[in-house]
Image: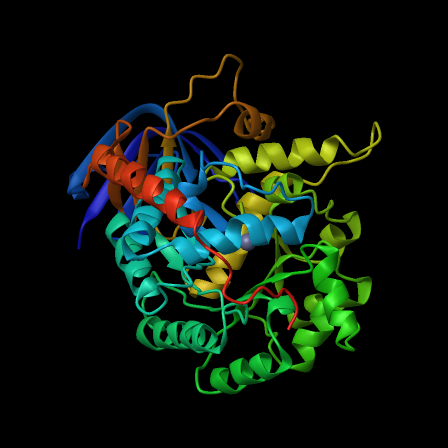
Length: 448
Ligand SMILES: [Zn+2]
């Protein structure tokens, strides 16, 4: 048993009671927060007492949907043919990238991506992975790296028909093996990853359903109605919507994650709510792909989490940019969505439920995942205005702790070299971009 005391800190844990503590302390026992408050306990009981000199502590943040496989896409050359719609973006960019990734470039993507997450104080990640020519063992590699970084991980491999039946089967098997292997791991919550309804045939959905009968307590992680094309596909197959199609195949349960949902119908939202499913909103990706704006009704009728869809690692930036993108479409005086609520209330609720342990708040009983900022505000920060500071003032944490252990101290990684990881990422990314140019999709179909 190890007990640590963090003292001389301002604690901000939004949507928690109390949400703001000045000159506070956090007592940690092994991996778990034991006590939080302002009247400091006696020092002698602790193996380590750390005076943080007035720094500000936030909960480690949660990214409810991302793609670490796209970490090396930053700076990649533009596609030969400029995409003019969502399907062309997938075909020209992402479906070439995920075929070009091999074992080495996948590893480099995971390491470089997780590095940025931790540097941003993001300590829990729901990843939707796709490396369609390196399937078997890819999730195992991701779990191993995430464990080394001390990050909570929900791995899922994107199953799809678009590269033929062999790769479909391999994708399904990779998910099932991972669920079997890590179902009881405290820091891993494996899910069954489906790319999207429009790249999966009825036969494939049936196969997935049958396979899922053999694994307990597992949900699917799937892109839903990100673009109208997905919804139109479901209609052309004779279903009323993507959500109805998935429900007809009995693929939706309370442990599922539905991503995007821009074009779902009001009755779809009702069904998801009835089933207790979280929808994950990714505002910067939606803006980048020009697929639409999530309707106000969805926010009002569903539990909505926040993800980045691989666009960036920093969740505070995603919240800020999400708020700004939405504001640009609102009339004066109209209330915006509370993005801090998505990040600091809904994401912890979502992660705590799926992982089955308390994650994402600074409260006794929660996992000791903390992002510590050397924040020097130019105006007072207090209980009533910390939200503005979080959205507009906070940048990068100086310290990051997960499971009660420091992973970053004074902006430097404790256990590994950022320089070596980035050097390798640069070598791998150049190779990867070269390989992408040679990729022709194996089956050039977006509807099967
Ligand atoms: Zn996505």
